[in-house]
Amino acid sequence: MEPGCREQLDFARTATIPTRDHALNCADMTKISRPSAKKAQQSQEATNPHSPVVDFGADKPLHLDSGVSLSPFRIAYQSYGELNVDKSNAILVCHALTGDQHVANVHPVTGKPGWWELLIGPGKPIDTDRYFVLCSNVLGGCLGSTGPASINPETGKAYALDLPIITIADMVRAQAMLIEHLGIKQLFAVIGGSMGGMQVLEWASSHSDKVFAAVAIATGARHSSQNIAFHEVGRQAVMADPDWKEGRYLEAGTVPRKGLSVARMAAHITYLSETALHNKFGRNLQDRQNVTFGFDADFQIESYLRHQGTTFVERFDPNSYLYMTRAMDYFDLAAEHGGRLADAFAGSKTRFCIVSFTSDWLFPTSESRMVAHALNAAGASVSFVEIESDRGHDSFLLDEPEMFSTITGFIRSAARAKGLLPS
Amino acid sequence: MSVNVHPRVDFAVIASLVKPGSRVLDVGCGDGELLELLQNTKDVDGRGVELSQKGVNESVARGLSVIQGDADSDLKYYPDGGFDYVILSQTLQATRNPKNVLTELLRIGEKAIVSFPNFGHWRVRTSLAINGRMPVTKDLPYSWYDTPNIHFCTINDFVDMTKEVGAEVESAVALNALGERLGFNMPWGFWNLFGQQAVFLLKR
Image 1 (tube, helix red, strand yellow):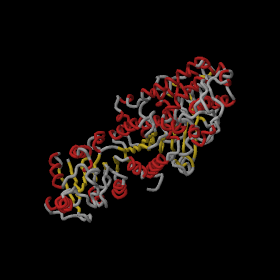
Image 2 (cartoon, rainbow over the protein chains, first blue to last red):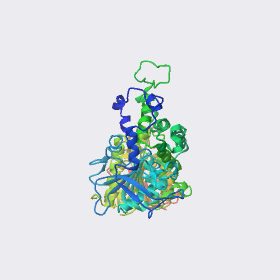
Image 3 (spheres, chains in turn red, orange):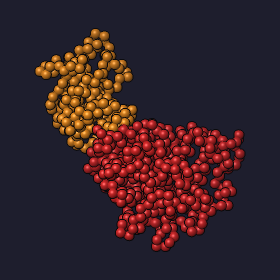
Image 4 (cartoon, rainbow over the protein chains, first blue to last red):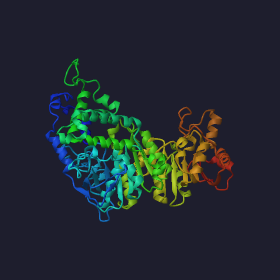
């Protein structure tokens, strides 16, 4: 679900979790709610990113689902490989809730490798020697595309909550404008997991002629009630933090660290499976022989979650977290089509590959199966694979050989069908 | 869910019944071998459904459009007449409700191709008659208690069922144990005794 969590999940790296407690009430958090150097760098990325940007001016407004037009707006993106002469080899990667465009390069804030480098690169399943791979920071994000931390031209201050609500379809509209700007008429493939998978389904539904192949991983055509519930817990945590300042923390010079940390901690649990947590942490104690009869992080799992919370704050904008979670909550592809999901894909010529994981309880296989059945009913070409894994929702970011062989086979076959590979 | 009878001599027969360039759904496609054969030799637009996850994953890695699903419960998600051919190879006998499955095949496809092992074959008959035990042969290797083949039928039984569901037999082929075609003009009773397996092309 997040760049960097791949490393955190690695057993070998468990030992690198800092030994001191990352307690939410530890000194560096209560006394200093001011931006750290890293945090300042993240804010810098929001307005002046290390990525190419495209600015869409007053002549190209974005018509949002909320009925509002957003103009001007900016999209920041990263690309890998070369676009071929007839611009037919482009693959768009859609990132997840707290991901960003740095899919296969070192992250400018965290210094960690790209979040999908296992999948994307020279000679990888998505081979950048062959394909032009593109990933843009979603609208509402905080790594350079227009989001709540961007400057509102009308006020000269950050939008904060004055930014209109962004939906998954709005993100996709903005991406479609970027693709058009780059002169790409049809994407060879769109691929993404979790919220990225939602964008993939939206792309295939609302811009089906622009998508030759679609890979939607660990996702669904809607956000479930339980998923909305977890997101609401996260949002309430952010907004309950006094340093949130009704969303105006950038002007106040504060950071709602505790709130965003707690939001991240709760969400992070949903990205893992009970088995994975148990195998990794069990009831093990953190750097101590006995419980302390207090509220320190006695257990490794507590220390791990606190670490996840604090590191997340360094690289993510709290208001952007509110907008991203809301976008996922509002997503319901069937509802956009009279309640019948199959109608979202009527007449689709796109080739679909749907992937789920057995231990993913955030987007369980039943959600993917629903999509696969709808695609069947619409007469679309669909592959649907459920992969055995005990690593929960985050499996899609991890080293899952069966996922890689599935994607490799699917992409190769689609490339042959499109004439990008000899048949 | 395709229950293997080796060798898959029925594949060549099935492929000979499929017109080039048609839309094909293979129900119980196993690891995708038949679909791949049809794509390569008949240029079909092929899709598959397979019960075992291993089979699905292998099929998709081959670049085929295959989803995990159950012939008994998941065919209802397919639209009427969505395919030119729906194929059920060596799978009918493993379904819970073969008659319902056959009806669904003919709803989804203009034509259905069904291959199945013939339980009326003389080897099966003699095995039961002489040994007094459920037949376990080279081609039907399972014991009665662990067989996935819960609904065996004979060629004659199958012909009766096609009448019950209102299907027309467009053509049929019986194969002996060596995978050779039996003579065309033989009566059903002859095929029922000497056909080790049968392939039927049905239409609505």
